[in-house]
Length: 209
Image (spheres, rainbow, N blue to C red):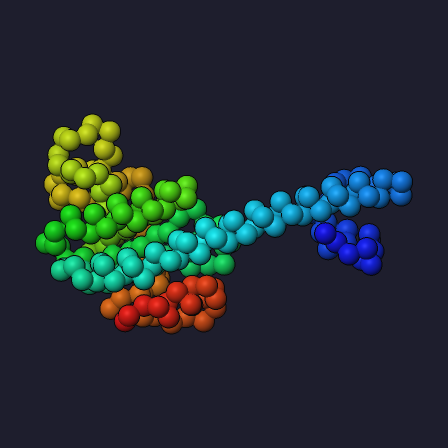
């Protein structure tokens, strides 16, 4: 509840986005305060929920980095996208993993399915973008348990099954060389940048790098 000592004009200025577009008559002041309280409460509830979603997505970072860094043929793990900004309600969390040309992608794809499953429980998404050792984007990890040519006609990979668990849908999604280079490195070294969100900074402190 709002304190009666707060003037209506002051409150209206502070919570302008919450206010109904009418001027309440003095005789309806109590009703007006109730409407205002409910609107601001639900707005704050939505903001808190969005914050919780972001916090949950960030909580996956230490686990994912630790698990992926143990796999053979992994050269770099990085973070990119809106989760690296102050965006309060990101729709997903995106990782970039640099891999050797001959590495078996199945273990990495399996970890990708796990983090996607966790994110989907919150109606969010996750992607594991892949690049080669030259810094060239090559696609994403496949989301299916079984990945071989002809398994699914709906697969939009350009070379489905040619390299198992590589989803090279380059006509749908593509990352520039600049985007690959600009991704925030998490492993094998931890990159420190000025201006990262406070919650991301706290997450990075949990990494065993």
